Length: 205
Image: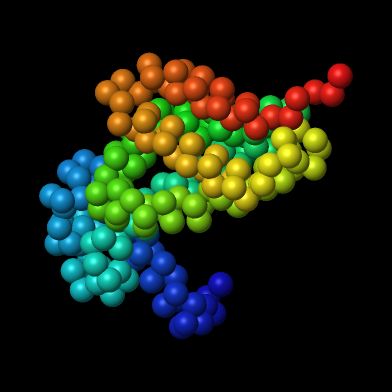
């Protein structure tokens, strides 16, 4: 361990610095909001120089994009676990994954705070691109599996994936914007599942 190469040490230091910046930025964006947080604030909170922040990120918007993307990754890890539940049938796994995607926002005020700010900071198109980067592979994979086992109607799965993605994105945003998200979650889940079930193949007589 004592013979760590210089390049490896530099990489490790860079990774630690980047993590410190993102952790500080997340705290400030959640507590103060993007508009009232400056790069100076992020540098001070992370105990780094302003130059160090700009060394790793082009601007404050890029910092927010990375913070938001990491929050979405954490949600998607939980969704993927629900989607892989071995004791559930394929359609039930799909519904469990959708439920987890919605409930994660109800349960985590920090993630809700970031989601509420995302479209105003990044724009709706960029936010959708980031969300799709994280969510679409799982949605496409689940729909492909449902089609394979005969639980999906004979539809274009690419189109279905796009629409399911947008439905879940809107469901999550509805929860994030709610004054009392825990109380609204059941209603959002009911409507979401009712719409998703329109894709389910009818059992053969």
